[in-house]
Length: 349
Length: 206
Image (cartoon, rainbow over all chains, first blue to last red; front, side):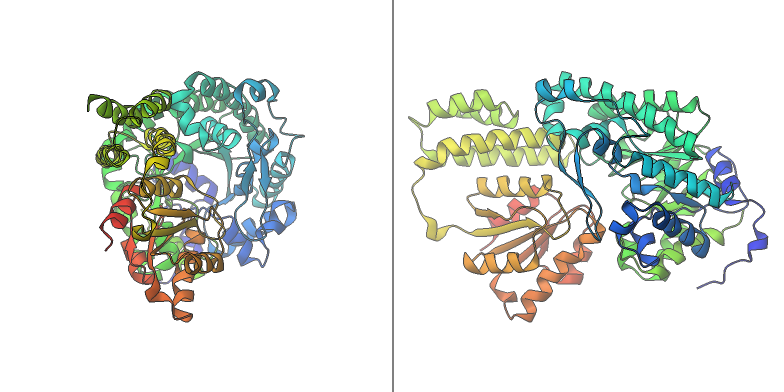
């Protein structure tokens, strides 16, 4: 392992560095922000359950890991599915696994759609806890480390209100899905704005439901794309930076991501970054995409090599943030995360 | 013959209402084995389209729903030859509640004439092994969609070895984060990249 460059070689703060990359520029070095929630709680000796309802513990786990591993962002990934929980789906919090929805709010469109209430970020479910986390993180980070806040895409939120049946519905009950999407879009505009008011520097819109392995380019354009674009348009009015993450192989629809109005695109490890760079142009900010499986099971040297390849493929001239292609598992070895972070920290422009 | 072709098309299109009506009519004057084999062939064609990215998961889901409905109508007419049937246990490993892929494996393997026992999601290691022994399963199919829970697949194989039962069952794995490399690492018999590959594995199993 190479030794880390001394911190004083870093001319920019983490926040500035990420912002430069998201503006299509070349910062002092490659920014890096691992997607970690459960992993970060484990480093601090907390269970996932501990941090789901305890602001201080969650905030500490994020801040501690960003500081001690030297990466550039803290995240409020504790917010996964929180909007859908706030609107009636039941979330089960496990001791040491990711939370999951166990009961969906929409069982019958005719009965349940009209009962659906737009969320109130300051009142419903765990949303006030998440907003509090962001405020506390902002106080701690003082504009130095980026506050990266998680927001479900309207289509993702709809799926977390309806369950897997949404995939059947998009063929068989398309109009009902659109009705639901109008509601989830509106709720995400409100919650997204609340995230910015609480202190989010960057919003990461997440849409695993639109995975390139699950729906076609056409279905993406007709559902995920349209509503995400509307959401981005509204949230950009606040001035916040926005990037989107979609899972799976989206190679056949990379061009569409450039029409969303987003500041960057976070790609799954199934997408070849060299190809993405070619399709999306030299300047479009790309974020990715070390394999989370390799982060869990490969050696630190292999992770460093893979990280370097990501940078060479998409980040040689800036406009790039190094991270994993999806969320990092709790048991990923510390040495592997450090290897990814160090590769970016040693890559000066 | 024309009607059988139409039935296959209805199933492939996921048009369950038309498929059910036609199946009820067809079963009165066709051999149930013929209906099933045509449907299975149709699903394989759909698998080829999936491979070529001409159809995606929503289309597969509604087609497999229609297939299940038709199977319910046809199955009672099938002669019982249980002793020849291969049995597979499937489930999503502990800590993971994702089920779309696993369910598709179940439907497609049923269409191949496999006796499928689905243990559901978040299934404990013990339960896989106990159930496999109880029903003398040929295959244990382990699904997972998260890197956090991949280890569940490994633990099932390890536990089978520990109990001296590894040779009793074939273990096949699937799910977004796993790969042939992972199958080799943990000593699984096969990695199936999608439900169609799993069905093919079961079909070719001697």
